[in-house]
Amino acid sequence: DADVTQTPRNRITKTGKRIMLECSQTKGHDRMYWYRQDPGLGLQLIYYSFDVKDINKGEISDGYSVSRQAQAKFSLSLESAIPNQTALYFCATSKGTGMGNEQFFGPGTRLTVL
Amino acid sequence: LAKTTQPISMDSYEGQEVNITCSHNNIATNDYITWYQQFPSQGPRFIIQGYKTKVTNEVASLFIPADRKSSTLSLPRVSLSDTAVYYCLVGDIGSGYSTLTFGKGTMLLVSP
Image (cartoon, rainbow over all chains, first blue to last red):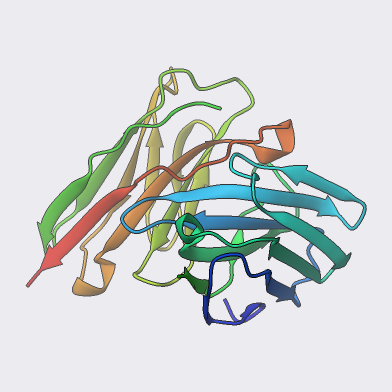
């Protein structure tokens, strides 16, 4: 969805490096999410934020941190990247939760940690 | 969070109707059922969502029996472009769940 953008789209880095993935949205949604997807598997939730003052851990938050700089921006950081963090990372937004509040996904960032 | 079970893969031909069933035996009262479609290297895209009975939109129908322990996504007259992975999600992240996962989904292959 063009309303949700992610930068960079591809990144190759080395073990131990700090990496930041950025997500921006123009949908005006309060809620934002970070997922990772490993090859052949589904998406797993890393962190989610219901507003700029609210950050929540997802299922696999270890090794990651996030920052909600504004309603429109939600960044994911890998403080010290390791090879098993090689994956496709997706940012998503939603207006709310519950019935009718679908998630809108960005195009993804492909991260390779050597 | 209610665990879901879907077939790993399904095959179909153009023009056929495809039904993908998802089992969610421990669905909670407040849980919704949502289906997403994902093409390779793209983010998932919302297809349909429901709570009970039947829901229909311009691309699919969702059938949910009274006990809500399963749901069936129905894609009428599929085309080659419907080849994708389909995920069934059950739950509502607003209810405080921290383990919203898409599972492995169902890989649908549509052939000419």
